[in-house]
Length: 105
Length: 317
Image 1 (cartoon, one colour):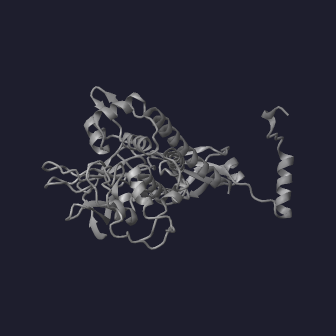
Image 2 (image 1 turned 90 degrees about the vertical axis):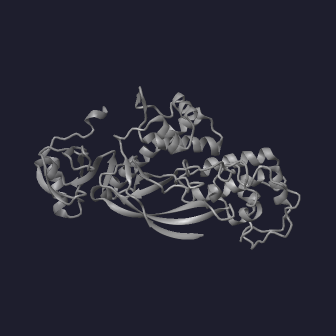
Image 3 (image 1 turned 180 degrees about the vertical axis):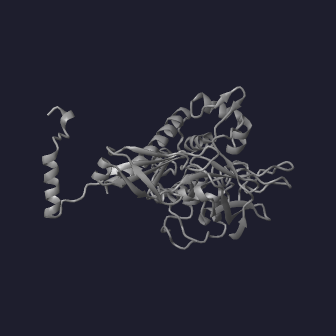
């Protein structure tokens, strides 16, 4: 095990205005264009525009989560799509619950 | 190094058939999957499960593992006996589907030597130069970091090919500059900070998913920031100017008369900074003073007299 401590190069923020091409999304997530298309078909992600295809940055997270669930739990893409949606909803509900519990105190 | 009891980890008997091993793995994997689970040690548990399953699902590896005997206890100090793996070729490769860095020293010492074929293409001979893979991690930041910008140190575990072609786990701390205006769901890309490239090709990039720590006062919805502000009943009813915290410092807020619990006061552009900054919403919460003295009780009695107030009017009772 080796330890290194480095200053990172200047970061680039991929914000809401930053749109990814199909190629960007494939490279970033390490998957093929066919796999991205399959995820679009299942509704895991939706392109922000279709001509040409551009994706929101949030798609990186969804794609990776769907593929992890697919790989690790043997869930097919339709199931992974459902799981990704439910997980996002749970996350929102938890945040809301945290807030309400805080108000009670 | 510690002996690992892969059967115990998967919660199966040593004689369990492949089907029950798979069933048990799937069940535990659903429970501890880091995307799904909120258990504190989910990630470590999940890695352990994967390692155990990696060995027990593969008849060849399982036979070799069984050959170590069943007198070992989990956690016991372990050295592989010389020649223990004679006659095994581990056709499946050391790592078939998961990152090598997930595995323990124990696994490494048993199966780590045959690392060709399969996997994410880590050590597949390779023809010529190949760019390193992109890697991903999460970065946890505070609401204030987005207002002011900040520098955070994150520690990453990387596997790089060592001189002998075996992956080496390196721990690496990077200072990351968090730019002002970062918002939930955004990603930070650090060029060249992913996996090293092969044959002189450039390294991959590191992507950091931005996640905000829950804050004691503020909560976020995109670039919009919310603050729950307690006010006294008379402040809400009569109007008042009160002091409220904001991420950029306290402000004096004018509460309009006849405000209600849940009324929102908008501070335009005081949400997360950006070219089009978000707004800050102050949500009023009415705090009731306790009736803990005779004077306080009298004040409530006077209110009762003064109002013809039926709070349950809408309930049909």
